[in-house]
Image (tube, rainbow over all chains, first blue to last red):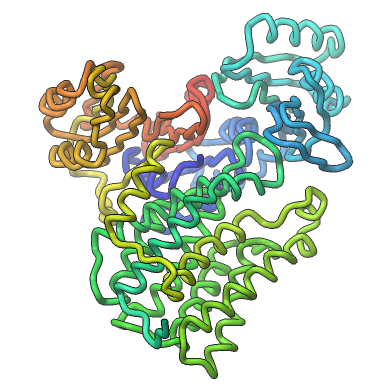
Length: 186
Length: 366
């Protein structure tokens, strides 16, 4: 479930700042954030970040000395700097973009599109990254969730180091539920 | 039954029945999400949004339609979750604006109010997408207007609205290719029609929801996960903090309470709400999570200890520290509440990042 408008309004009130920037980090939260913005008389910018990596990339473009408008522009434009991959499981049978998906399959999502599926977390993750990483890719951020083991993380890292020796890999323990891995590729 | 007018009480009945019907179909709506991912939860979001509106409506209940619609709209606005929840809140916001000063409305005014709701919702969305709840609500309201021009019976108008809504919903896959590809209709539109079905059932006299009945409905849902909200607090002040200690803890309920299931969430909430605001209580069979801003954290803890042992106690002095507040916590293994995290940035800027999982929050803080 997503946070309510009131949750976001409360967060804005708690933070006690003159200007507020909101990173929803989920396409289904952006509207609620905008609704919260309309309820409060503070200068607020909602950056339409749809994923965690987009949020991180956007935050890196934040400049405390710049105006809210400048930050909004820079942080919004920074959303494009990163590609997002997500690995989770299917809750029912489906068929999208000619990919047959069975309930329980591990699915790999590249920027909102399901591109690969298998029975294994590692296989799907690896296939997804092969699909997403190209010659312009420099940094891969791996955010692993609460349902993967350190062995799985290590195995994936080793496979990736073999396959993409020129890419810098950053590992983070995200502790997120439902999503085994979230990848940011810059 | 023939109704030529809707007053505050009939409106209450309709909304309660609509909420009940939506609540019974939450899983069906969730299953319509395009992606088969585990956090596709349009039904859950809409249900919680409407529950927040219903709670406010029940608190302010009167015979005046405009006042009741206003209460519903306010609760919905603050409780809105997810895109469909926000759009639903805007539909009722427009509706309530139209009926604001009216103690009761006739069939034409009802249809006009629905239409104003649609106009408001379209304006709230930057890029309206057709083939969604927006299309379903618009086509249904337009049909309502057409029929209301020559029909005084509100039941007939509501029937036309629902019937057109169903046709419109069935056609959403023609407008939104991804729906067609996956073989579903729009989830938000379906959720709206469940609410309209409830409206119609009341007008037909098929069911009578009393306020008590609705109470039990909300309770049965709370076994899954419930977020209750205090009365809408529109006033915003950053300077004066009335309740200075952000207090969070978990009660592990005593065995006899668990066995007899005698923990009454509503009573408990009412009881401790006297000591502060921003109250959040999430209960399941064995544990209760509590979050409150209070001046008397000790009193609240003592009260809570009557029900069992306390764990993960966290008390922050908010006058000193504004930087890190966890507003929402995951109280259930099935549905994962997302956290709204306030991450520390020195004034004059504050940055709010929404994320799932402690580690993700850490990344944003670093």
